[in-house]
Length: 292
Length: 316
Image (cartoon, rainbow over all chains, first blue to last red; front, side, top):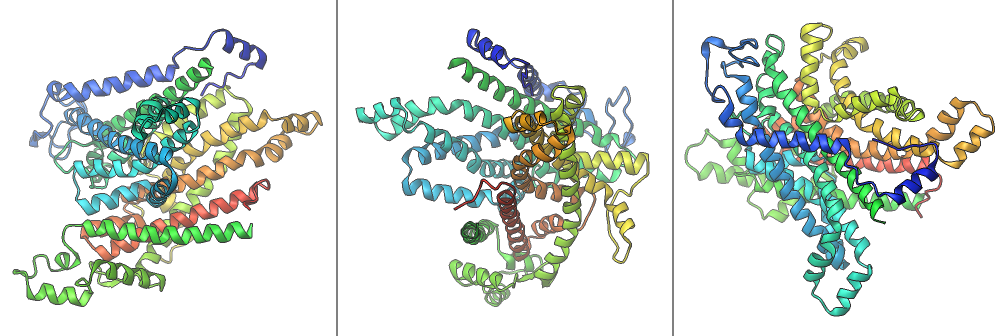
């Protein structure tokens, strides 16, 4: 969000030319560190929690936060802190896998569609039009409804929702590279389509793809927790954040701590990924102007 | 303009056909068909009853015949019968649509008005304290899913402060103020969701526009500041906002589903969820088609607004 609105645009201009800004934006630093923390928690989380995520403490149902249960317990007396920590793994893996599926397939479609063009491009783009004319969450719901409610299908549905959007971004980046000299040179050399696409074009579309991946990742987290909130993702007794908020809805009034911890975890994760995305966009934009 | 409209509506029609085909195909993947769902647990052995019912519902016909008859019926306003409710779908859908619009439209209006005001406030003094505050708040806003903010709203405003009820069930015949009272929280949640996205766009496009030569000319002519900002600059700054509103309608529809769930509100979103839970295939198909079609119409409307706002675009 820095606009570098200095009073003298000329000075900005000169400075930019003299020393290309290699400065890493603060948001990127914070975003990367937070995401790193989440990944660490996702990996070691299950080994460090005070209780197993599904251990019942019937004597301490809906207990308020205390020294024994740091963030309180839910309606079965399960330790909420342990459940939230365990749930990190689930949410991070689901969002990550969904993004990877969507981005990798979308990347392939975008590259081929953009480079080959013609009727191939036309058909693929009309198909993406149709998929994109569904609101994201509703399309994901429809896919999960068709395949069945579980983690894997939720991940697949997120991948399907993302494919057309990523394909669009990659396609337009590819279109911009079609008539560049090094691509034309490769064509004149008689290289195959796949050589040109993967060795000449792909390395040059990485910056927009990386930015798009970060943006998709934050939507993926949103979709994962939303689907599980609606009962269309992980099923009980999984310690899923969205599911925890949904299942404890009846106790919002009497024991509000049941939602604070999962809600906080969700918001923190999305903020982390958003910062990562914003920072990455800023960083790559700065690098681009620095290169020229 | 007329040509643009005709072409755009033609495209819309084609897209709707594509959407209907997509929905039909996806739903076909569903394990078991409507008859299985209807007879589940009622009839033990497969055979007689299943076949008779399948023939009666026309499910024994080839897929493409089923699809075209479904499409034909939709075009004639017949959305079929819900299995779980055992009632025609169209009136239920319209009823629920009304409920959802009562949430979505006030939320959208509030969000648009506030986003213009806040966006302009932030843009007129970039990196001032108001701007930074708005940036932090909107960044948090876009990071909070509707069901999280909804749940927190219930804790704060229904449980602690006891200002509003925690569920938004409506009874017909109540006055406007009762409605406003019951719907205040869900509308606020939706409005905040949309607002957070819109403010960021309004702010950045306003900053761009304020740098342009015609704004400087207007200032140098000695026009009052408010006139320059709100009359000259805002009109152009609104253009990207309009596009983003259109994009946001999709997220807003998702938000409506979540908000309805949080506040146990009987709208379109909860109907879709109900049809999934009940494996009510005709209802699922019809409500999904309805929502997707509504989304397409909203996009068309946004395009038309864009053309009206920006005289440079003539779409010939």
